[in-house]
Amino acid sequence: MGAARFAVTVTAVLLAGFFGTSWLLRAFTVRPLQPDPRLPSFHHVDTESPQYRLEQSSVGDGDAVRDRLRNEVLDYAKALADDPCNTILKASYIKAVVAYARAWISIAPCIGIRSCTSFDVAELDRARQAFGTPLDHRVRDAMQRAHARATFGTGDFPQETARLVADLAADDAIDSAPQTRAFRRVTAQFGNAVRADCGR
Image (cartoon, rainbow, N blue to C red; front, side, top):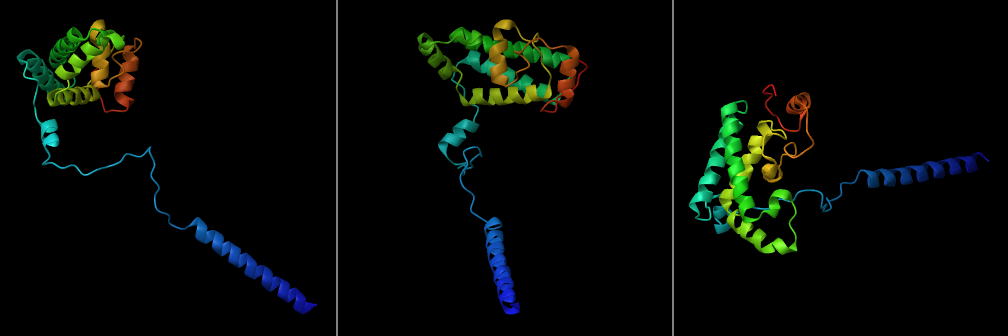
C-alpha cells in the first residue's frame, strides 16, 4: 500500500512538473514579431535619388505671384514659430496665409467651403498642379510648426479661408465652435503641442 501511494505521488509530481515546465516554456518563448498594419513601417531613404532631391528643394511651379505668396508664408511661419507671442508677426503671418488660401480658392472655389463634387474635378486638378510643388509641401510643414507653437482661434482668419487654413495647418482650433479665451489658454498650456501662452 505504501509503495502504490509512493508510485502515484511520484507519477503525479512528474506529470505536474512536465506540464508545468511545458506551459512555462510556451508562455515565455520569444516569438518573432508578426506584421501589424497599425505600426509604422520604415524604409531606407536614398538621399541621392532624384525624387528625394526634388522633395527637399524649393522648386515652385514657376508662377511669380504664387512663389511670392509661398515665400511670404514660409518666412512669417518660421518667424512666428520662433516668437509665437509677437502680435505684429502674427498679424503679418495671418495676412500672408489668407492671401495664400485665397489663391487656392481662386482656382477651386469649392475647397473654401468643402463642397467639392465630381463636377469640380478639373478645378481640383488645376489646384493640385498649382499647389502641389515641393515648395508648397514646405509651406504646409512650416504652417504646422507655427500652429503647433502659436495659439489661433476661430476669429483669427476670415470665414471663407478658415477651413482651408485649418486643413493646411492641421489646426482644428481654427475651424471649430467658438472657444472662450479661458479655454484657449488652458489648451495652450496643456494641449498636445507645447504652445506659447500669450495671455489670450
